Length: 189
Image 1: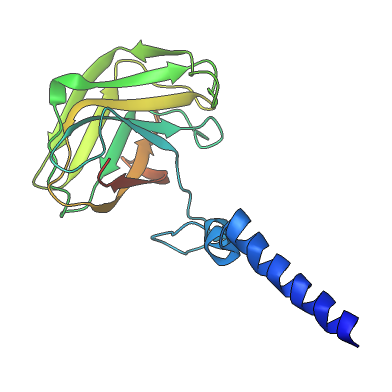
Image 2: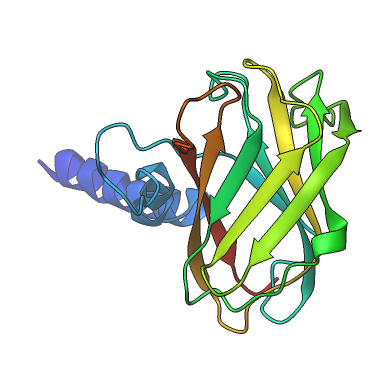
């Protein structure tokens, strides 16, 4: 009987010591939770993005908003990005480009991209909308990056949902078709 109690005591101490050595399992489990989504509707398509230089408030950053080949189901003659009215950052109209990527890129290697000639860039701050017009339509099934250099990040930290839409060449109406959304996180770094 004494051996049984001693064994349970040693086992309890070992289990507690194991938690301290490995870390709190409850804290580790939080990383396995699904990511927060602004829109839980069926069909919500979250697009990938990278913020280079800085994602801190009031700092300068470079936003690389990615659109994968699977998301480009139709050719595009215009790209429209809507952003929320509480995003008070500043975009530089002269520092915007569309890059067509031959490879997708990974953790170990950067995507091989080349800039596309632009016809016009229209940043409408009153309607919180950016319209990009490439000189030639971008074919369906193309990996892209919409690159915004010299972006002044907003004053407040937070999450900002940018929505991407395209207009296809040859459409009878100027109907904008949704592609997906980027959830841009502005935080201290």
